[in-house]
Amino acid sequence: MSDAIEVKSVTRVFGGNGKGPAKALDDVSLSVKEGELFGLLGPNGAGKTTLIKILATLLLPSSGQVKVLGYDVEKEVDKIRPRINMVSGGDVGGYGLLTVRENLWMFSQFYGIPTKEANERIDHLLKLFALDDKSNAKVRTISTGQKQKMNVIRGFVTEPDVIYLDEPTLGLDVNASFAIRTYLRKWVKEQKGKTMLLTTHYMVEADELCDRVAIIDKGKILACDTPINLKRMLRRSSTFDVETTIFPEIESMGRLAGVEGFQVKQLGDKVVTRYVVEQESVIADVISAIQSKGGKLTSLSKTEPTLEDVFIHLVGRGLE
Amino acid sequence: MESNWTSPWLFLVYSVVKPIFGTLILVFMYLIILGGVQDQTLFSFMFIGNAFYMFVAQTMFGVAYVVQEDRERFKTLKQVYIAPISYFMYIVGRAISKLAITALAVVITLIFGVAFLNVGVDLGATDWLLFGVGLFVGLLCVVVIGVALAGITFLTARHSSGINEGIAGLFYLFCGVVYPMTVLPSWGQTIGMAIPFTYWLEMMRRALAPGTDFSAISGLGGYSNLEITALLLATTVVFLIISVAIFRYADHLARKKGKLDMNSTY
Ligand SMILES: Nc1ncnc2c1ncn2[C@@H]1O[C@H](COP(=O)(O)OP(=O)(O)OP(=O)(O)O)[C@@H](O)[C@H]1O
Ligand SMILES: [Mg+2]
Image (cartoon, rainbow over all chains, first blue to last red; front, side):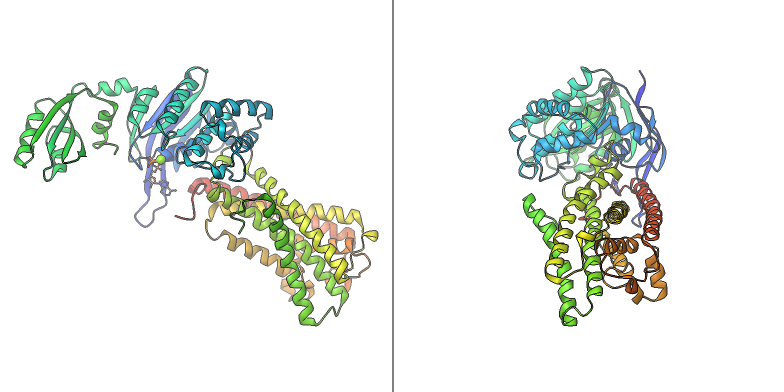
């Protein structure tokens, strides 16, 4: 199979603001195969949206080469645009004076889709995402989540060969997210040659949906593999959830020798800390350090590595 | 400006009534200051020029406003931008709808002028060929300059309406809209002669008011209708090339600098 997306040594710098230019992407290379559902996972500001904007022909790379469907994003946009689409989660765009259906129809016209065909697709998708009762409502009167669903539909109405979804389920309720995830999986798997690049904050979403995942932080790709292989990376490390009372300088625990990853969650007057450690014996040092700082251990459990642990391991911190 | 219009009807009325009032206020100021129409030729000159200038002002502001509105109010700019329809053509389409609305205002203004102010428009004697060619080329020119301004709006968030007003103001100043170009110093006249709207307005006046002789005041009396048409065409071609180049460059720069989904509120 050929590559639908090819990114070679791409760097993107944004204007300096006096503090020296910031590298949103720093020498990023990756490729996504045709028919693949590819995930980009990374904390805020990692560069996910920047990469998607470059792939969607909205933004030029500062250096490096990017090809989509074999065409250069700088020089061959006319070849690329008819075959791609993009939806961002925060996206609540739409012409307020038009109805949901008119909006979707209008965008289908920008892609030259015959009205009859467009209307059939629109009807089908509106039903699928439970938005059919709002099809004749003016866009300015519908809720934020409904606007977002409309935008997801806008992305699929044009039946692109490559679609970019930037946190498509952000802020949607459980049912809507589920409906969208199910649709995304089916869309890629049941049609030939459809490629999807997805960014998400939800580890489970990435784990469940994606064929491959790239973990990105501070503009650099830290790892890129199937979720199973990524989790296998941690086979030798161990993951523990340690519940304690609150004690001072919790954050310093992450710097103990042998601790590879560290994430703290406060639950009432307790703290649950996840430690990814080099080997099991390190956890003994962790516990004695807790006690020496005045913390009381209330529970300790070993867990199976999840994609989130891989993330914590690589990025050194959790997503939230 | 055109924000918060909930009903398309209200929007239409507003789009038509506002420019008409703008034009008529100027006319009445003229009448009050001079205590009535002193010179019917000059008055017709001003009235017709002013009426057609509505196309320039309304469309040029309108088109650049489309970019701002799509980007910041509807948040559809990037969605339209990545679609296969060229953004250039999309803007042209939006500009033509602006022209259509403005045409209504221009017609109403002219009818008012003829009915109540004795403006020398004579439809019976109108040179329709001159009018048709002139109107078409002039409006084409309005649209392409609008597209160039739309391109510049890609790059500027807050100051773009200032730029548009500045450019529309320059045209107003140099193209013999409300006063004949001949009152300008010679360098001003030279600038005026390089702008298509100067010839366009002259053609509209000659075509619609063949009974009025503007040759003594317009500064363009020495040119025949054919020569004026040729001058309009030639300057329009130059403006067209410049406008397309500006749009393309601005488009490239916007992608390079990442300006296509910025928001002036942050
Ligand atoms: N137009 C811009 N001008 C200046 N800096 C920018 C611009 N767009 C993005 N950046 C910077 O580039 C970096 C990457 O941003 P990006 O939006 O790609 O992150 P992200 O991974 O999508 O984050 P999030 O999860 O919060 O959406 C950030 O540090 C951001 O401040
Ligand atoms: Mg983002």
